[in-house]
Length: 97
Image (cartoon, rainbow, N blue to C red; front, side, top):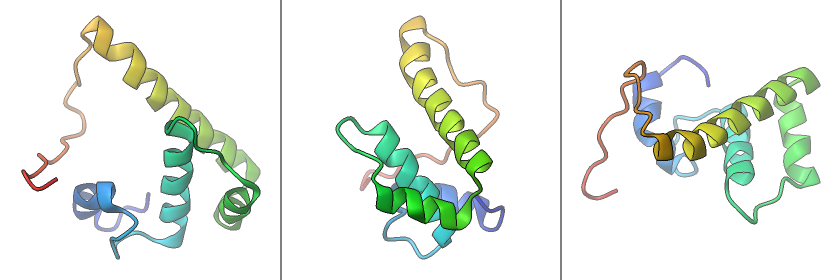
């Protein structure tokens, strides 16, 4: 994601579809990540065409690898009790979330 508004964007990432903070490139990447991550979702030709507007083929491969690695970690770490290392401080979610 682009560096501008990083902390503010992080606070709105769960509502990225409704947020005005994300660029078209970021929205394409977030949609891609969501579809890869959510069981039963597919990456169709339309989404792939949107990705190609913003990323080279090499960048799409790297993005896919990064998403896959985070999905791996989300399944691998919890059963082994591996905790976050504190490198990225994620804002607490409000009670309304």
